[in-house]
Length: 286
Ligand code: ZN
Image (cartoon, rainbow, N blue to C red):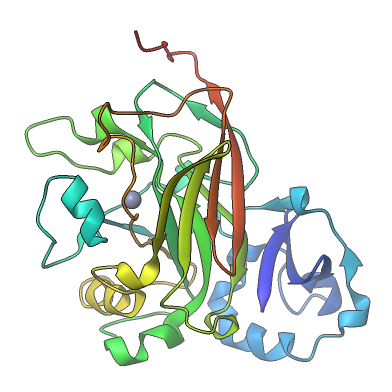
């Protein structure tokens, strides 16, 4: 199943048609997508019986972020060997965990403001939790995942790496620094949800292309490792890390420029298209 936030309302998506969940369920399920994860299994069961004939045609531009108010957002750094290597560090033996504060979430087609000329791209697979997960073994972890979506972990590198013991979270949490979408896809929709192409382009230029099967810690391993410490709650997000090709690791280093469009795609899910605009503090690099 594919679901989305269509003009603000939870909808089941079938090709270019959509079923409004609150109306089709006569109010049994909420119109707000953020509220459905508490009752995810019940919702999935009901959704299997919905009548596709009731679907209406929709325009992709109506889609917003499938999740906007998660209780927790986990993000994993250095989770692809080649990205760890380009960052000048060894492959981690434990996940590098930070958060993106939830006010950074935005929709798949929203413009994103660049606060400085030091903002970098990181295309990422994002897992959405479908039921409370506490000390979940890796083998059972997929059953706790409601679905997968595409995300960008935009990063202001100077803020991210400032201080004697850099804490990544703030530099990755400016407004709009976490575009998400365009849809949420349940794991059963994929031939192999553990092996998907992740890519990122700026206008027509490909910047990143990788496969999630190259992750150091897979989605099930992350659910196991994170839930060993924090209970994961319905609707929580896990940004699973980025493949190689970020701007900071290039020679010369490269960052995002206003007037361009950042495209972030994941196989079987879809593509984010975020136009980049200059913020008040943006100064052209010399
Ligand atoms: Zn990242």
